[in-house]
Length: 544
Image (cartoon, rainbow, N blue to C red; front, side, top):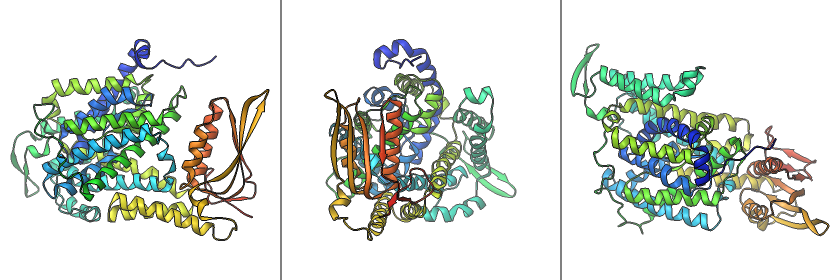
């Protein structure tokens, strides 16, 4: 029996609103604390995160090219936004945020342009090890910054390495009441997914965390300024340990400042926001497509346009940027969401909450949110590290070089160095074979043969030679995307000297996609190749 795919847009709303609204409410419970926590960690007002969730749900969801992803602020953008505020503001956080809002507006315009130019394939051409290194680095940075807040200590260092070195000192000088909330939050969110019961399936961990943290805040009297003694030491409690939300949903005094848009440092922030937001959204959409029980495939160009419109609006009204977020999107599928309307409903519930539940939101202690983000950072970094350890020595070098340079200097520096190292390793791997030219590094060489039956095109055969690496794969991918949806594809790779990990993984993804569609995608000629690691999609060097 053929699976009936849910209709989308307004017909889908009529047919699936019950399942989508239930899932939307569940995602709202997860998203509310995350939106606030990510905004605070980014150096932005808490409301900026909630605005991001609202716009991501109510507007971007209906314009994007994915079906069941959830849009909103994400941990992966904390480092970018915080770095932008600190860099552009030169110590003035309010002015830095205004400049950053301008950068978000222009980044949104760039994303829209990329979508209209059909560049939704850009994420697939970044080296896998570099992307994994970028995500792992972001996880480590989040932990290094948030652990101090969870302990109730103000860190002094401004660098990631310095923050990591300060952790033992923060443990020694922790504020007991605040640290109890922060450490308990880390423990709760770490073990909650391991508990198998009906309650844990229905009640999301972040909601339990917020309720428990708020109860402790009331018990410890965190809402009122006071001193207290613990083991012979005196500690201070004030409102700075609690979430603060302004009465107005949109603060008209916080508007984007475009006065430095021509400065190189500003343009660098624009590039950072555009690059990370676009890559993470596309990677998430691709990952969630694999989980979609209906095997729907996202339109990556529309995905860029939808996120771009959302970020354009957010920059204008005082919100932080959004992406398609993988954890909330996965939970959305697990909750039985059918269409993009679950994303819309999650945004609607966020809007209602900020209108009617402000007093309750302001009872959430920052330590609980920081504890949650420490766990988020760990879950972002650790899977990437485990994955790369199995991927071969070359991927290991690229991955850890990206991490080290990111932690020591900057995310863009880390990514750039990772890309350069990957390219250098490809040069080393192609020194011995004859016939490799400079052009082979930047554009794949191939011939195409059409196979017809009864004058109808049924298969395209590509004979490739030279190199298939992340640098030149974009041209092949664009060519493959043009193939009609009822035509099979075969690739003859016997004359290719080197296929890297990024391209090989993409070819395996095509193979799975075509199989789901009832088509054939095959690549042959690797019989004499040598795998560069034990992974199925590892890079392969053809031995001549």
